[in-house]
Length: 266
Image 1 (cartoon, rainbow, N blue to C red):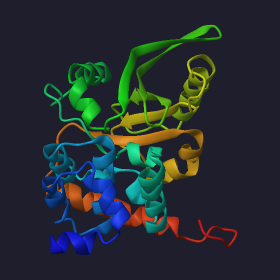
Image 2 (image 1 turned 90 degrees about the vertical axis):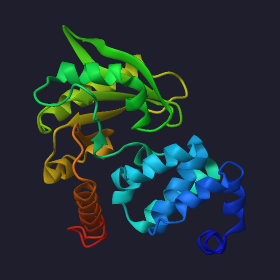
Image 3 (image 1 turned 30 degrees about the vertical axis):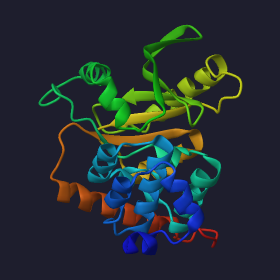
Image 4 (image 1 turned 120 degrees about the vertical axis):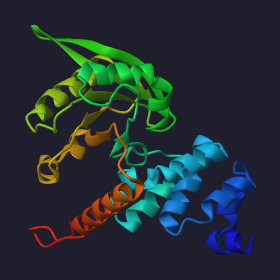
């Protein structure tokens, strides 16, 4: 309890957390050394009402390190968590992960994009738990008639907290930059024909075998509401994954503070 008082000194935060979290939840949070990770898990647990078992699984699966949020500066992370705590406002940085852990049965060895899609639908409950609560399944192979051509979107979801449609495309190979135009087309069609009044613009998630960081940076995909993430069908050793994520976070944060060509902050 002394440790709890040291790590959570603000009364308003304690009052907010203890309305939902049990003492067992608190005990699972106390060993975390990274204060930002601890605050992230506490707030997400409160908002999504995780059980103690789910909280431990999220921590063990390094959820914080896999979020887009963790790649940002400490100031931005704090701002996002404050908005979540005070206003209940969820951002894409809190929702999307990289990589996604899709260790489903039947995905070892050779498999096709359709096999991956089928496995996701078969293991729908597990897949929805991996991105986090709030996702609802809408359609598989969503047909879009644009001009004289028909297109099919692999998977379409809706996120209740983001209040927006989430289009998901599956790619077995590394992310091809030329694919960006097609995804922009899909998003504009969804925005025109499927977006309901009061919803935010649709966002796209491309799950692929890998992506070139410099290409993704130059394409400025975040500004186009397109997210790229790697998926893993076979989990690497925990220490290897942890080191890889820590290295990615360090590089991303260093790039965030590099001066821009004009002399200002990036």
